[in-house]
Amino acid sequence: MSATTNKVDAVVVGGGFGGIRLVSLLQDKLHFQNIVAIEKGSALGGTWYWNQYPGSQTDTESWVYRFSDDRDLPKWNTRYLKAEDLQKQIIDTAKKSNVLKKYVFENEVVSAHYHATDNRWLISTDKGFQFSATYFLTALGILTNPYIPAFPGIDSFKGLSFHSARWPKGLDVTGKSIAVIGTGPSGSQITGTIHPLVKKITVFQQRAQYIVPVNDRPVTEEEKREIYENYDKVWDTVFNSLFAMGFAESEKSALEVSEAERREVYERIWNKGGGFRFFFETFNDLGTNVDANETAAAFVRDKIAQIVKDPETAKLLQPKGHYGGRPLCTQGYYEAFNEPNVSLVDISNNPIAKVIPTGLELQDGKTFEFDIIVYATGFDGVDGAYHNIDITGRNGLTLADAWKGGANALYGVSVSEFPNFFTVTGPGGPFANMLPSIELQGDFIVKLIQEASRRGEKTVEADAKAQAEWAQTVQQISRATVFNKVKSWIQNDNVQGKKKYSAFFLAGLQNYIAKLAEETEGRYPSFVFAR
Image (cartoon, rainbow, N blue to C red; front, side):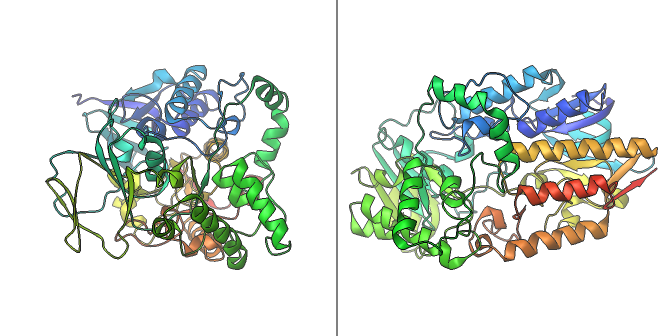
């Protein structure tokens, strides 16, 4: 443990794509000499360091799940990348940009306090390191704070239990009896991947999900060469589309075509695979028109009935509400329920009452025995990881108090009363492919710091009124979408006791880019610069 306070230009928190991008920009664009980056894991990777459960992978296609200015020959060989490959990609990117040496690992930031007397942040870690920094930047990730409901008796289980984001490395599940609680991305991916290995897997479902196939496959050398030769056009498509996934989004309403044409479109994209493709490439109003949305929902429900042989199980797996929230995709999830060792327990009206030493007990008294319990219960998303750090701004205002009415950062990057504090993928940022979003936010943060320097000012932060107006805009747009009607971490209503509000600007990346451009051209009217 060190009692010495190291004086630095900037502290960056996070070892994922966002963190390494910030460090790279600070050293290459702003030419900061003293940068410290802190990561609680033992290596880089961020979300992809922690989420390495069986089946974990991105659902954004490999060739656009990297930074647009990384033009080295692609190393990916499949349409989507597994978690371990994504972690390797982050480490490789960090080495190429020479930021790895800036990192301090196995340290968790526990506090960051702003001192107005010298305009510096005092940042402390759980291992006793202290840093005094002019700039405090966080890239904590949107899905990094695991959430497990407070099940009574949770510590009494005698077997092995863990959250899906803390899957033990090297765990062999062969021949084990396993409970998977949750049917979101991690629960469905785990189930679809491990069921051939285990003795028995029981899936506990609170709410049925709309899940389409991911249809991952190898990418041929010819395909890679064609993508790489046309990379400029690929990235033009990314930055000139609403959600930046690398394909042209549909311009047609689901309601303006015949039922036969609609079915052909859904069938074709279903077979192509990909949750974002099914939601955005099929028709342009699945997220805004409930009648259009129902046509897609009905198609998926029909597919479930076709795939799952047992009618009762199929009925339980068919969602009843709107298709929205986070568009899910995985491989072999519904097919798994045709296997004799896979069963479904619906807990919507008969919830888990408690964890017992041998397994789980439901409200009606029925018990289940397991060797392993996997809590695939999701995350306290977007702002969740910030609750683990005591962040205090001007005049003793804590970030927890500032966000009590709903977490929001102006454009997802800056918070009023917290000078020289910047967030990447913070609340209020765009709902889009994460990598382009990180690029845009990182570049904008650099411009803010440069503008403060040009003005001869020492601090910059969001204007309180502008931030409040942005928060209002974010929520207003959300209310006009189907996303607002679907319970999910995107709306922050998946965690008990948390206030429902949209964590994202849902109007698309193009509109977000326009707002940033408006700020830049107007010399940042929504920000306060001070000495």
